[in-house]
Image 1 (cartoon, helix red, strand yellow):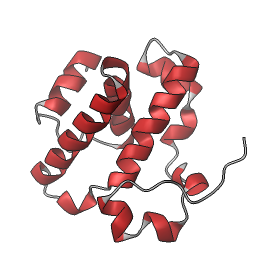
Image 2 (tube, rainbow, N blue to C red):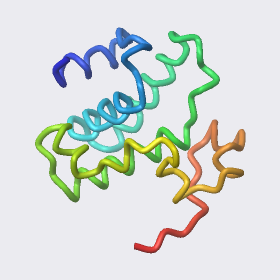
Image 3 (spheres, rainbow, N blue to C red):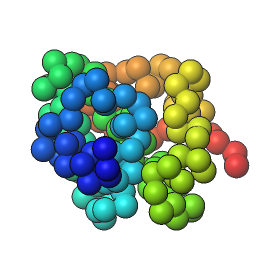
Amino acid sequence: MTDDEIFDAFVTGRMTSDLFDHKMHIHVGWLHVIRLPLNEALAEFSQKLKALTVLFGVADKYHETITWFYILLINERQTLCQAKSFEEFIRKNIDLLDRNPSILRSYYSPERLSSELARNHCLMPDRLIAG
């Protein structure tokens, strides 16, 4: 699928659950970041992702903190690397695809991230990252 087809499938709710794996989440997030001002990217991605989880029958899987964290991190990484394609972006940020352990572990304690508050509201990280 092209970037335009991926973006369109996501925003129109035609994305299928079999295609929407972690890498596709990152891809769609990156497309939002490069196409929209950050505040609009956050709002639209969150809204459309919530709608997709309902459509897929897994509404309880939506997590506000994780969603916002990844969009903000993708935005920061894209600003720094100025990738011209998703493939280039991923080559320069391969750690975003790590699932076990997830990059989230560096920023959030398991207790904070698993809380109901974090699921329903965007919480700031509770682990200090020296870099």
